Image (cartoon, rainbow, N blue to C red; front, side, top):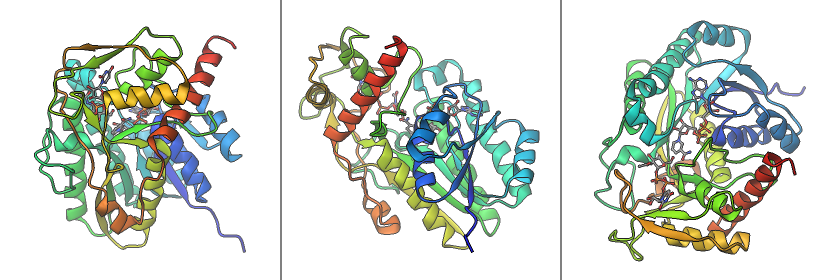
Length: 344
Ligand code: NAD
Ligand code: UD1
């Protein structure tokens, strides 16, 4: 007898990290059902996923704040677990529109959790962020580093972590994974899916990639006077496919227990500076990438990288892809994408 595939509901599965995780879940033998309102993604991603895996995920266009829709989904599908990516993520925008962020990220998560509780689906993997560590007091960042928030976006992540912790403590049977991402970059090696920011990218890597294609003139380096080896900010960049595989490992870990609250960093444990990233991308693309040092970006920290031991000890998972691979994959995707955009 062939075992029935387990269905995982992936909220925000059309987006950058959700789409790569959908590929990893399908490759690990799960059936994926995506719920996404497409506010920051393109439905064409579903066909691109099918090109990679041979299977188009089921898709429902809708909002995680729509409780009626959630109830229907949980009663119509036999969902085993939820991976919750849906949310807004732009730090600057969150300071301008805090209510939109609390509504989408916190209220949306509450609606989802209430629907899960009602349907007796008690396994959830949540997209948290290294932003919950605030300004690092010590490096590398371990999971027990004190938490704080410096902007509304970060606060939404902190609040949802706390809601999930309270829920876990209140009732037996919840299996909760809080995954704290460091800086996901790169794309699927097929060049079919990747990061597709709307408008001017907020994050370094997509900006650098657009300078390499000639779409933007030069990178603005936000400060070269930090207390770091070359004065520019240092971050722990992780390949999005390593991150995706970390989710599959976290789900497997949760499933083998009756109740679990797992909190792990998903990073590589190694930091690179802005100038090192620019140099690595020049190498991967063969393009000269001009840059100009400008003022620090308000709210930025000097440096940040993960302690990865807990993830390895508990999940047996480590990131394996190198910075050159991250840049090569991001470059392949950016070329495909800019070719498509110009009709080429
Ligand atoms: P993304 O914007 O590419 O994907 C998010 C997806 O969620 C999009 O497809 C969007 O349309 C959808 N969405 C948003 N609000 C929704 C709602 N109310 N209902 C249904 N769908 C909704 O972002 P991403 O980079 O893939 O990030 C995924 C998650 O990971 C987010 O929660 C983000 O905060 C978190 N995260 C991202 C990073 C990063 O660097 N990209 C770092 C740490 C944490
Ligand atoms: C930012 C968010 C963080 C979020 C993360 C992933 C802020 C303050 N923080 O983190 O909450 O979890 O994205 O989405 O926005 N840089 C430049 N020029 C650029 C862009 C960035 O020099 O055009 C520098 C930054 O100063 C930083 C590094 O590049 O040193 C990485 O920046 P970015 O990609 O925005 O990520 P974070 O700042 O780590």
